[in-house]
Length: 476
Ligand code: GLC
Image (spheres, helix red, strand yellow):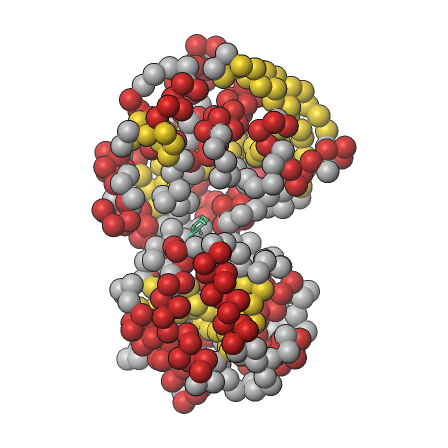
């Protein structure tokens, strides 16, 4: 199958969240399965230095509101996968990826530029796989603009993947002047809503776990889009993300002082823990449980619950806490303060570093992710692979990937709680600590089971392939 994958970010070119990882790993795997792939991403300021190293394919002009914008196409190959980077100096040579007043113009341009590429080079895919709001206008633009230019656009099938419903690309309605055709599809609650447009116009839609698929049809998780989503529920699917298991494995990671597997983790994890305690200049007590939190600092991640209970554990000197990530200043300053207050127990790194992250996954005993909502979540899966048991709230992908410890059967790969409630989180942590200290055998059994779980890219890619096929055969 010929699939063009459109994303606002892809690792290693640009990454602000989990989408970037999926946008790198899924197309690569699909290509390995014998499909023809190209990945379309914007070229941001951070890539501009590489300009000379990239091959320029050509350029075209996009007209928006009677103004012309030049789109330049660059070709890059990373790990044998073709990337088309789309550049316009005025719109994309900026520090951040999103969050500017002219975002509607910037991403409308990006959507047009992808379709113009197809038109210009007469290079038609069977599937256009779009992701999140930043590429959600594509099906609409095909319908109103591009079919007129070339009939072949009629045969392209579009699949929209929703990685996070909270971010919708919802802008003041005055921005509709940017669009050449007035239409109610793009209007939602008196705003121009990119994601809603994609939901209404894509041939099929999916999100990144089955539980999240069900949740987003409800009011609490639907962020006001539950109505449009319900109207498309028969074309709405849930496909769980996988991750690159060859990249994230304690058996082969080059960043660990000692590699280990599911049979040698007891010694392996201990060595890594000792090394990390020294490296980070923390108190040296291997028997104290170590909790890791590696994630974006956003309300979604349940940090508000952590803020209510972590102090107590640290005051009583009951655990280590290692935090790594970036995001909202409110949370960043909370973590900063914690690390100042408990310098021997808390380590805080205000950025994401691959090397250190492997070391923390390997050294930690528990991995915290008490999300308010979580479409899929990748880090809890990576944590399991490294034998760090996740403590999660039962929502979305967390519910689908973390089977909580069952004291009657002994089955489980982590700990969980139901409601967005700090006492419930505390109970889950207490349960984990109790096993850690007093039931080592059970705790180790859980690690063994967690390390055994596979969320491979192949499994994930197979499901996308069968969805593409259904689309191509008009079975959806
Ligand atoms: C978003 C979601 C996260 C998901 C990722 C990749 O970042 O918040 O749950 O794993 O996208 O699909």
